[in-house]
Length: 200
Image (cartoon, rainbow, N blue to C red):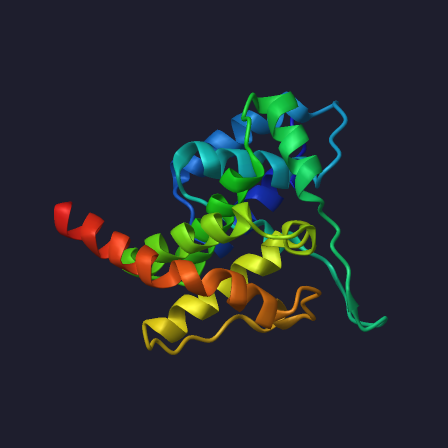
């Protein structure tokens, strides 16, 4: 039986992300699969909640589970995405490519930041296309890369937005490099998003 502390952690984070009761209950069911088993990416309750959010389509960003070492003055990533992908496949049969994880991260921020459909679809399109041709420096830091892409889309759509304070930790990947790589996709992705909304 899953411990009360595991369940409480799931419920607490569910409130933060505004997840439905259906996703919460699914997370508690998935938690039973990892109790007593070794996981490598994050706590068992967070892994179950993240898997449930993918299955339900109520995406949440991994960036929220990042630990920041402010004393040393450097951002310290506690969760490695490749370990997350490994645990998702091993315990829940969810197989994600790095590109898919980038899309999920972007959609997670769309939910948390309450971005509209046009903004979200343009951001996902730009992030995935840029990621596919990015150098390893960006690909290893793609959770912070997604933030930079979202801010770039906001500038192009003339939308002012503020990020939660904890997301303003030092970004190892230069924003200018991200913007240079992403800029050529922005206009096409915005137009594609507009077209999809008109067809829908």
